[in-house]
Image (cartoon, rainbow, N blue to C red; front, side, top):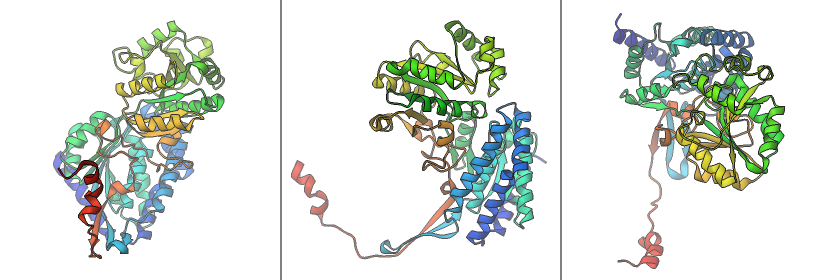
Amino acid sequence: MDEQSLIADLVERARAAMEQVAKADQQTIDDAVTALAWSIYQPDNARRLAEQAVADTGLGNVEDKIIKNQRKTFGTLRDLLRVPTVGVIEERPEQGLVKYAKPVGVVGAITPSTNPAATPVNKAMMAVKGGNAIIIAPSPAGWSTTAATVDAMRAELERIGKPVDLVQILPQPVTRTLTQELMAQVDLVVATGSQANVRSAYRSGTPAIGVGAGNVPVIIDSSADLDLAAARVQASKTFDNATSCSSENALIILDDVYESAMESLARQGAYRATAEERQRIGERLWPDGKLNRSVLAKDADVFAEVMSLPEAARSARFFLVEEPGFDAASKFADEKLSLVLTVYRAADFSDAVRILKGVLNVQGRGHSCGIHTGETAHAQRLAEEVDVVRVLVNQAHTFGNGGSFDNALNFTLSMGCGTWAGNSISENLGYQHFINVTHLVTTIAEDKPEEADLFGAYWQRHGRG
């Protein structure tokens, strides 16, 4: 079967599955969403898929992927079960307005090798919440894990009597041309992963949602609780061996607390590289100008060995490389996808903001940044001045950026980064991106002000001309 026919068959099956739930009530849809969540949340499956993901891709570690499989799924399910997506979802009688939710259609989902189980389930839950079907195009490296994940989702749908073709996967081999054909035939493309995939999605001619690249810089200022900040940085940076796009890549520490903060980080298991080791790490992390796959998202002892670091580094949890100053041409200003944190010393808070903006201009503009501080005004300044969608305050960035139980962001594994990153959304991907809304509009009492109500103040300031 040629690629066009193969995709056409998948799409036809997806539309048939959608037709079976077209008249379903909210409870029926929510049961299907919960089935998808349970397929990966149940402990045996969470572990099995985590083990397979690490075995297939060599990225991350099993225990953290188990947490990701369960925590992200649980949080997303919480969010989805709290919102209506079937029939009337909002009524404003005083405005003569009623809103009806309807499916967007068949969704084509591009998913990354960093999360070959959690991301497909996350997107499937959101898509099915809107009454849609989804066809997943996984990273070739993660295909086996994603296929097993899709099998688990389909099995749970079948167990509760829901159409299994609400969730499908591209067959092997997943080629660029096959994925492009999928994007051409579906109704909506949602792309998470490499920026090449995101740009391809936007060029497909199909409505598309893509997400931006991470490269998170975080400030530790003079008012921060240094030990607590260090603990949060350690927990976030080391989670799943820094596979997350929300993992910290740079720390910017104010001069007056610099050494104290470095000591706090050392107590959390950080290894402080020497100037000579910094040089060697740079050479081996980017041996040909590209990231060295042998250390990407690998355990700390593997990284230490590849970098020929001393015995003390073999038991470290993560690694600190200090830059003498911000240099946009330095590779250490870029994303590292490994247990390395670039550290900058800032003269004062304004200097820290300057460095933070510089890092984001290298990569990560639009995505996010963070700050550990006791000064509300410092956090507010970042929100006002920095071109990012999310500014996290006193949080472990990886755990807070994609939604948390102690902040108001919705759970997701796909973070929109606004036009700063060439994205169509500036928020966390959520159910609202998987529904169309019909507005029923009836007349109300006329709401037409007098000219003077609108122009009066302007005339007083500037005259009528």
